[in-house]
Amino acid sequence: MKKSLLAVAFAMVAMASSAQIYVGGMLGFSADKAENAKYGTTDFNLNPEVGYVLNESWSIGLPINIGFEKTAYDKLLKKDGTTTWSVAPYARYTFYKNGILSLFADGILGFNGKDDDTNVALSVAPGIALSIAENISLVSRIGSLGWNNQYGNGSYFGLNASSTLGDISLYYTF
Image 1 (cartoon, rainbow, N blue to C red):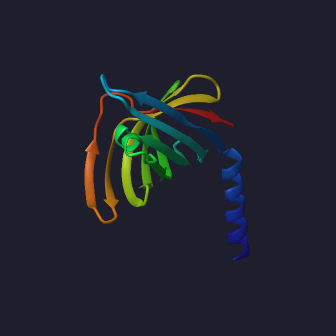
Image 2 (cartoon, helix red, strand yellow; image 1 turned 30 degrees about the vertical axis):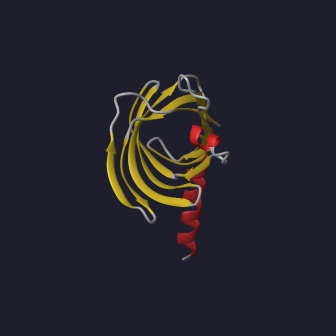
Image 3 (cartoon, rainbow, N blue to C red; image 1 turned 90 degrees about the vertical axis):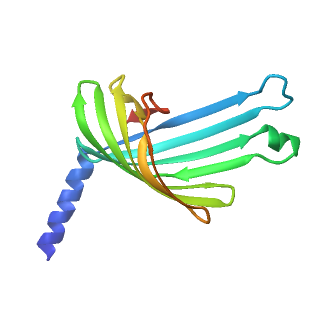
């Protein structure tokens, strides 16, 4: 028993010594106003992310999203805007790597909410990473396939396919 525990401890130390940590995320702001309208819509998003590279093929990560939206309707009624949040841990499998380009798929378990409504989601999202410097990468997910359960509002299954890059995150790897 002691030998087994010692072997597991050595394996964990070996994995940890070869792993790398990355941090990154996105920051978003938009404001628009329709022609001839008194009020527009304002959006703000903060998306920090931290991850851990286990080996050449596998990583795990934890992105957090905090968003705020105030629409023309909110402004007319003198209401506060809508606050959204999400926590979406993922396991990332990198299946292709050639020079500065990597292709991956994320398995995501997401929890998100809007005011008092909370959802659970499960999805797979393909993505692309471009290493622009030794420790700096640009990363984007391209669509997703998944299931979303909105408490009190039913379940949804869907495919979000896109030929354009989604949001682009900037990562720094230590």
